[in-house]
Image 1 (cartoon, rainbow, N blue to C red):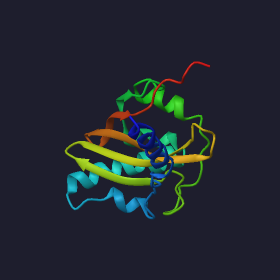
Image 2: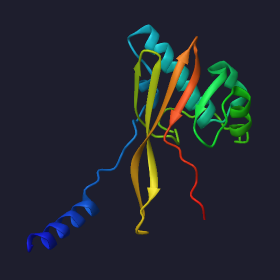
Image 3: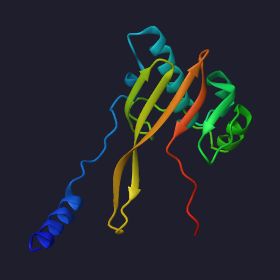
Length: 161
């Protein structure tokens, strides 16, 4: 029974100092390439979604990269090209970011078959109020006929106040 308080103190101390920060790539555009032509094409579609739409807010270009039926598995956004454009189209348009100047810090891009997964840095406030910490956010798109046809992420509905 004496070991329990000691073990608890060790676990508490380790959890306070154990996390390595999540860091994005210096040149995120390089991650959206592949030597396989099909995977490269799929990664390029997602590059345009992340850079042109999400980073730069050029939602008028969304029909180039998203299918009409675009299935959205995010509880905050309805499915379909038009609802997605209406939801995100409120964002101000900005210049296309240069390499190294992306606000979205991309950690990795993995493509397999018709799926492309992008891992990004997510910074959140510490529950104890002591600053922030980083974790990883994942988005996954299914590419069909050269456009994103489906999207998944870890979004949840906001908590009640």
